[in-house]
Amino acid sequence: MISPKRSGLTALVVAALLASTSTAQAGLTTPACLAKKLKAWGDLRKCQATENGKALQSESADPMKCQTKFNDALAKLNTQATAAAIKCRYRVNGDGTATDYDTGLQWEQKTADGSVHGMNYGYTWNTAYGGTTPNGTAFTAFLGTLNNGTSGDGTATSGCFAGHCDWRLPAIEELAGIRDLSAPGCSTFSPCIDQSVFGPTVFSNAPDGHPSDPYWSATTDSGNPASVWYVDFSNGGVVADGKDDDGRFARGVRSGL
Image: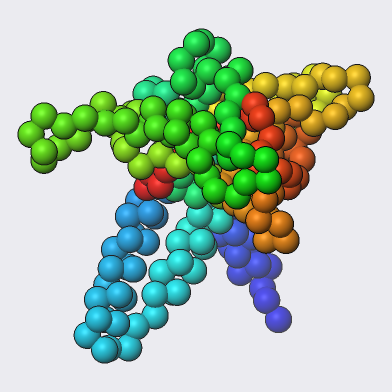
């Protein structure tokens, strides 16, 4: 039988622990949370390098444990961020890009100007009817501009967008991963994406609700080599259609963490 005195002491300890946890969560800020995620990425890379080094020496290695530990760390931080009512996923970098601290991807922000980043510029994926190769303006004009660096000495490249020359079209799961179906006005009067992070995004308000000018991905439809997957941020739809369609949009991405 637990004495009333001991029971009361236990209750006080539990209350103190709950209060300290609540205080810690309440004191969590977006910069602090993102910094913790960045550290988790560093720990992941270090762990992977150690395990891969073991494998190179024919020693027992377990690289999957690194990913599991990383996933657990991110899940814990996301839970704390939710409890603290703060955002803890994206950082706007101030150079026309935003970084996703959950996936490690760095995204090009769209703009409302006349540059290559302009939200209203459409691009092609392929140049021929029924064609399958990635030779359209999404690759030649869009990515060609982002990755168009120069070098004066043959040892260092400069002039690429945001200092990086490895921009590409996203895989369909990457592109679909930045949809925000909870965004205010999603599919009714505003696109299903966080425009404060990714910049202005075209929204179709056609009366028939037909998808309009979605964003290309780099992923071919496995059932039809002449089709590619895309995301329509007007309604969050993920659809496969012809690579020869004209005028769809492009959003650059690269591995950033």
